[in-house]
Length: 243
Ligand SMILES: [Zn+2]
Image (cartoon, rainbow, N blue to C red; front, side):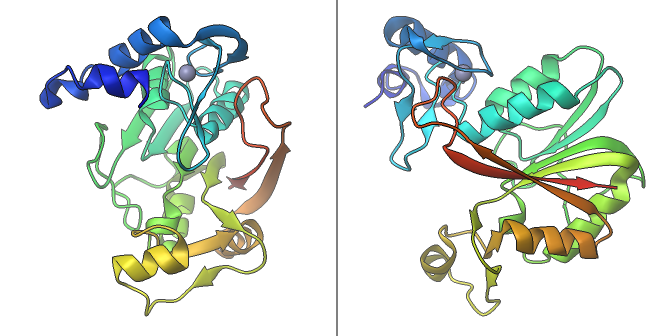
């Protein structure tokens, strides 16, 4: 059990969510300070990341995952004063940082209301005017959406000309794998890797769908050494949809 989980056991359930970041920071101070690794999101210097059952490396100080850290590094180059950002299903560590970023307009949305967010937008029918956002972040959302073509055309509609969407899902090689007759949670887990996923994309397959919706698409491919200092995935893809 991680130190964070142990600390959490002493806190009433109703307060665990509210004190999440403080508890993580305390567990970091007590057990994870070091110099071998560094989290680019919270800047903590670490002796180790926490290895999860999935193999992902969790930052003990802020709770970021490798994909959150990759996204955060990308955002440093893209965010400028006055930018209007819409963030679907934000991870908590990134939402906290972006809400504090001075001089930008930041809107978060979580349709399932699993996490605190500004709005509860339906991505297949987004309640926002045309040409509104400079940057839309949509990580690990589309693989949950049955009508993904509708979602893609909605993203295109609300993006400003010259704007960008940053997109990631779990990716496989080859073609997109989907089958609308697979609907039970157990079958979805077996076929798509998670009980609430409705397909597995390939980066190329999703890029093609985005082009059909009007976007220009760039596929960013990253590779990092094993046990790299920032705890990033050894290989990872992010799609940039441009209008
Ligand atoms: Zn961190």
